[in-house]
Length: 191
Ligand SMILES: Nc1nc2c(c(=O)[nH]1)N(C=O)[C@@H](CNc1ccc(C(=O)N[C@@H](CCC(=O)O)C(=O)O)cc1)CN2
Ligand SMILES: Nc1ncnc2c1ncn2[C@@H]1O[C@H](COP(=O)(O)OP(=O)(O)OP(=O)(O)O)[C@@H](O)[C@H]1O
Image (cartoon, rainbow, N blue to C red; front, side, top):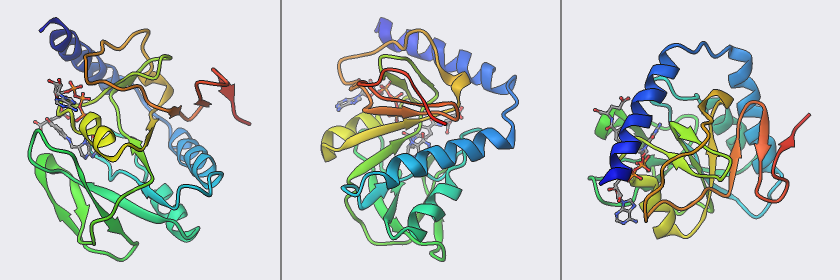
């Protein structure tokens, strides 16, 4: 299908862009802080689905610790067989981490149901579309849980237009080190 080919081309382009981009530690720090501020502002989301980093992705481990310290339940995905929704297991700072599919790690913890998901991505656009690694995991998981998805990325991951297929649902918010992008505010510079 043409959309799938366009997605493959964009994945290749974003991997190249990533290889040529130096992200300063300050940007990672800002991204973690903006996400923490954005989530802790919402008392209605006690259980948060975070992400353990894969190589080259923004590292949200500082956020996991901040949310846990603030009394939230932190869940991380276990990568299930292709074609199924992700499973979320409760994480604590001292829990054991197990290695799963595609080099992902998940906690040795109880299964739970997050109220909101932080969604990793390779590319995003201003229409809240995202491109992932191509497993379709987050599309299936957001559909199965019926919860909100908050995309997180560095600003250099923005593109003019992400090709979308029938199963791609737009994110509810995108947070970068530079701004929190919401549908209502459109473009809201923080700080
Ligand atoms: N940190 C993180 N965890 C995550 C995801 C993610 O994007 N980031 N996922 C989001 O869905 C799920 C795992 N999904 C994945 C689906 C496919 C591949 C994959 O095909 N990997 C290639 C190499 C990719 C690359 O070039 O870096 C491979 O293993 O050959 C990896 C993860 C759940 N956990
Ligand atoms: N809810 C769904 N039901 C059935 N098929 C789906 C669903 N969501 C996605 N798919 C299919 O999964 C495949 C991969 O989807 P896509 O290319 O959008 O993955 P992605 O969003 O990049 O990956 P990920 O979400 O794992 O990061 C596509 O063929 C897509 O049609």
